[in-house]
Length: 310
Image 1 (cartoon, one colour):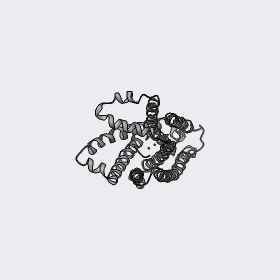
Image 2 (cartoon, one colour; image 1 turned 45 degrees about the vertical axis):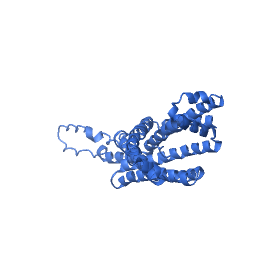
Image 3 (cartoon, rainbow, N blue to C red; image 1 turned 30 degrees about the vertical axis):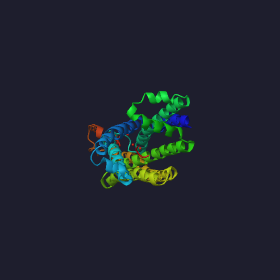
Image 4 (spheres, rainbow, N blue to C red; image 1 turned 60 degrees about the vertical axis):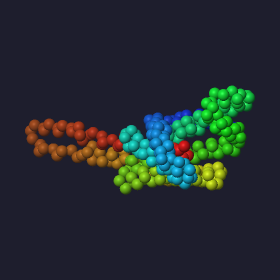
């Protein structure tokens, strides 16, 4: 099962990206933007803050209390990932299609790279270590570890040997929920970016939703179990995805209506009545020169967005 998980973790992101590009034609830029934002904002910037806060004077108090840690971790994930999402959509993807396809592609990139780097890479590493252990080379593996860390690593390796198929399936289930969540959040933030005004509240709402999912995952896993955790996380991800789906329908309707409205506004100019003819004289009047503005097409419509974070 570990090998299957590793294969899924490596292959699935590329299959999702291929589907998005094929389905939405111009989705590659959005996919790469989503992937890049996750790496920069979650893996680099957020990690720097964790190093500062959790190794600072208040770090032990946060780590030692499940509720503090859940609140801190959830807010940091929501703040960094959703801010990165908002900024990239506003400035990098501003010329992309206003339809929901841009946000869906972004979510595929964000959730896909998370699946690849966090789940896929971990499963590949675990599979390789398991193969070494099964070959009877555990002592040789431990010999490569500094003595100060050897006991800790040995405990981790022993835990790896006790992984069950059920546990591995829970991990895969969590990643599916995370992709649904990332796509839903991407549509929510994309709506805030494209519509602005009274819709901007969706941006802080996305931060809070992200924080809620991550915080509950930590709290429930500590107080109940993995099954209960995955059920709650999956339910919340589906709820966020459903909200995104409803917003996506609105975005698509407006995006489809925009070219039609532009064409309609250009029609009167193209169909302007002819200038009245001068009175007939002995010499026919020269025809009025055609105005290039009258036949120019209307201005084009506006040119064609991750489990919670680990």
